[in-house]
Length: 326
Ligand code: HEM
Image 1 (spheres, rainbow, N blue to C red):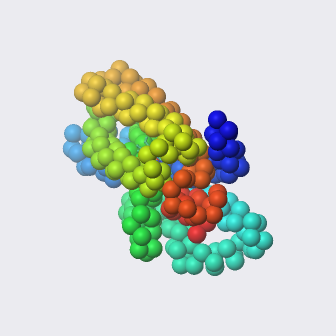
Image 2: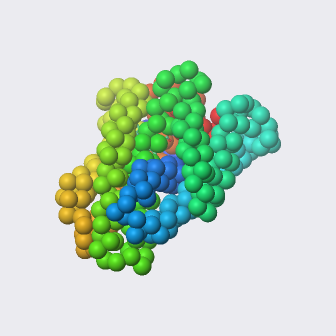
Image 3: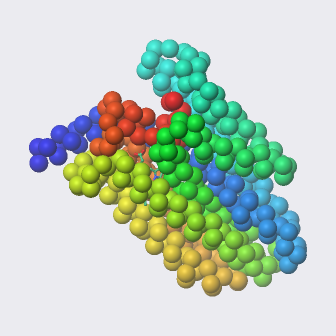
């Protein structure tokens, strides 16, 4: 009992609301950026070309612009977490932000350049410039694989885990808030609206399934690496946080399966479109809780590979706000 109290006390020392909030904003920025790309390339791109949907061309354009705007907001959130991370490190070390950037070397510069390209590309994509989507997509691929230069395979796992989560649930977010909402508010006929929603959801499914598989594989890998021993799951604060996360993940997965197996086959009319929007929103609400628990998880020192206490970069591998510190 005393041992548990000490463990929790030690964990508390590393967790602050500010730190968790910054992590959370970092996750949201990924969801918006990769979600917008997943939606544009997987859901809308082929849909736009389909002759049967030609009549809905203006609805598709409107939805695409909204996706671009969501990506733009996400890239601004990346700027925010970048600046906050740099300034936190600068004040901790008593040096200027420019010194922190130079100390971060080429990887830090690469990251800043990627985020700048995201901001510009999404701003142009929101103004219907199609080439800008391609620039954002290439940048996103390079950004996801940025840790490859470290030569440590494990440093790729966390960024890929985060990208997989964003391609599944971020794309769902954009589908709900840009796709389903603007189609509903559009001027297209009831029949066409129902058909458009069915087309969007059926294009989203393969992406969701493959991203969820990658999320599971990378999740188990990073969990194994951080826990080191299975009993850490019930003997350490990191393990407790992971247990809570996995319970909520189970709810998200169940709701996703429900939407895929039960709701998707019913699509075609407007009522079914409204119903799937409601259940997809429930799935996203629990995903928001997963992210909140994850922001706690990544702030707690892990029982795995050792490093200075509380140093996320020491015991854990690079991720959103963390990589900003490198
Ligand atoms: C709905 C499903 C899930 C979502 C949305 C999600 C999201 C995330 C995000 C955004 C991160 C932060 C990554 C980083 O900062 O680098 C993360 C970290 C993590 N995830 Fe997940 N995840 C999910 C499922 C899973 C599963 C199924 C597992 C394990 C079986 C898992 C294990 C972990 C672990 C251990 C970390 C922490 C890594 C660290 O301490 O640095 N996740 N997750």
